[in-house]
Figure 1: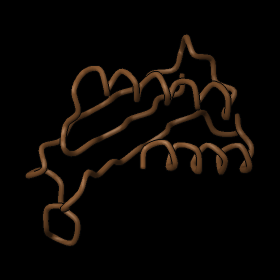
Figure 2: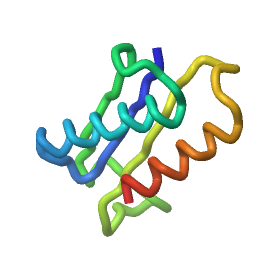
Figure 3: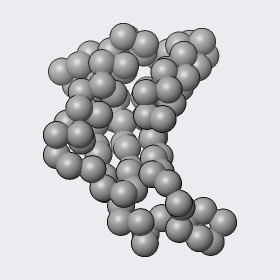
Figure 4: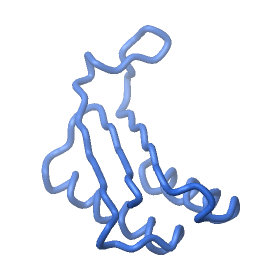
Amino acid sequence: MPTLSLKLSPPVDAARAQALAAALTELSATLLRKRREVTAVLVEALAPAQWFIDGAAPTRPTALLSIDITAGTNSADEKARALVATGTYLS
């Protein structure tokens, strides 16, 4: 089961979290050929006081996306396209 974990600061409302989860599921299905029905997406909100860059709180919204997939199930090109697409969508 592919698992995508998205950490955001500042927190977003439930509708935005659901939209992000749907978009990440779609990207996983189209770019990594993963089955939607077994794709798990976790959206975790972090208060700005819990996120630091160079020891200081960031001055703009920040996101961290981790994608866990089974080794050997995707080519390097597929993974690279997925990284570019998710970075573009989240920015």
